[in-house]
Amino acid sequence: MEVTKNKTHLVFPRELLEMIDKIVGKRKRSQFVIEATKEKLAREKFAKALKEAAGCWTDKNHPDLITKRDIERYVRNLRKSADKRLKEIYD
Image 1 (cartoon, one colour):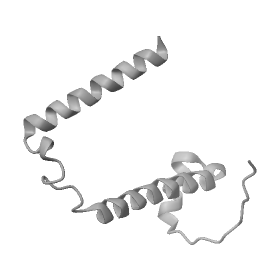
Image 2 (cartoon, rainbow, N blue to C red):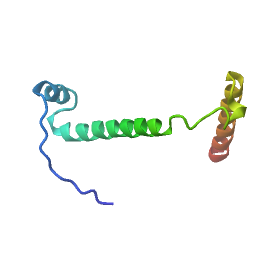
Image 3 (cartoon, rainbow, N blue to C red):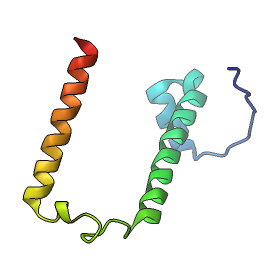
Image 4 (cartoon, one colour):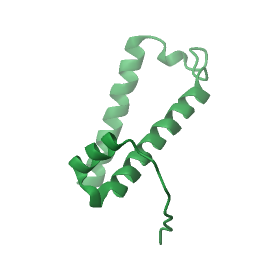
């Protein structure tokens, strides 16, 4: 799959560019900004999803997961089943 690239003009504070250059070098500045932007977008997307989903989980809908003990049991069983699946895949 070919990635289409576009040039753009961005304005950065000099100190920020100097810090980026010190860490990754001028030649890798664009890649650094791309990766940082992807990370920020992923966090923003996740925060938006959390906000939209707020309130959808209720004790009424999940009476089996009300107490801390219930939740610990659920997580323990979930981990066991994941370990079992991984063992089946890699053995």
